Image (cartoon, rainbow, N blue to C red; front, side):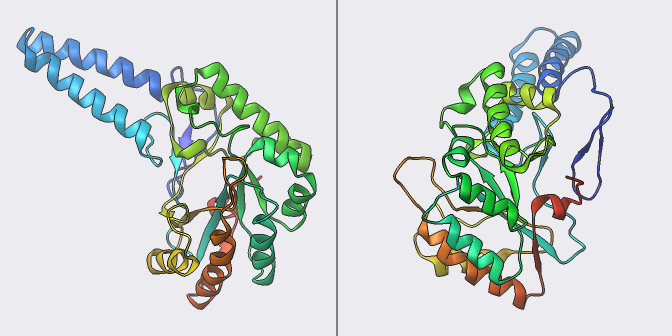
Length: 278
């Protein structure tokens, strides 16, 4: 059976349980409905209460990035240390990512880049620079389709596998990278695909809101006012739509790193934060 690390919530791999959480949720709904009907008879209450609870859990599992209803999802690391992790999504972007890397290098910091597979392949020199400078490549799917949450388990698996292959082409490692689904959304088909591949799913505990404002000072202020040890911070060095860029991320990164240094917080990769052997 899989066990969970108490400090990070990461599943420790062992023998696969018989059913995934998504399947268990459906079985639990059926059992609860049958039990309610058996106790109080067939009525609006015996049907409505389990159904309402089921749809509330379903909505949480789909819409909340940090939800573990469908699949164990990591949102932060140990809270008792002095480490945090910056994570950058949707890249690499040749107009933004180099400036982010420059800032990280200046401050001696490491980060995790959840990359879109086809962009990683399109910018091989930038991909190699990320790895050579000691950062971690995470899997953010192959295409980052905004419709991916409606894909079946087979197509979800293909998006995951192609993204992982793009990363392996850069790192030369066959270790499964951390996975963050597009937009952070999950679904039962994704859960089944992740379950079969025994992935570590990573969300975040602090959103920089760098997709909602172009003001780097506001982005940095938000992060530095809220950050605490163990946080995984979500930022965006790339864009999933062709021809669009997020330069505010590059401008906010050095401000954030300077603030973290003043707070005595060390910026590491997500795997370092979670103390995973990669």
